[in-house]
Length: 110
Picture 1 (cartoon, rainbow, N blue to C red):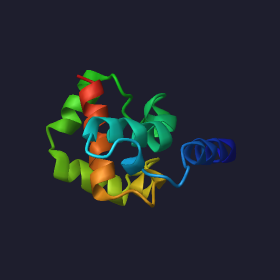
Picture 2: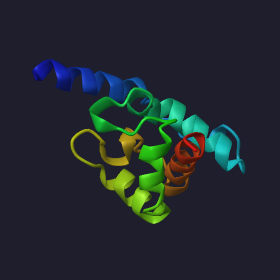
Picture 3: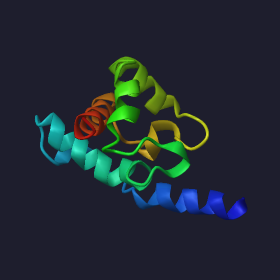
Picture 4: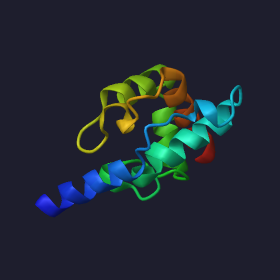
């Protein structure tokens, strides 16, 4: 079990650059969302690590999207056991950055 925790930490830190999507494409929400996803979210959401819904899994994301953006953002900001860390470890991300990443993942999963 200790190895799983270490592997999860490495995956989280792999996407952690300290930069947000703001510089990628100001005014382009999908580009910002994709940038934030690629820097912070992909390490878990591309492979389904610790129960993360995989991008492209329409069923998993439709259930989440039905809850609405406010609840998805709240879950992202606060984190969710067992593996979703608060803010997705993007401590420099704004609510707008995180919302853009959520919208990117939902759209890419339809």
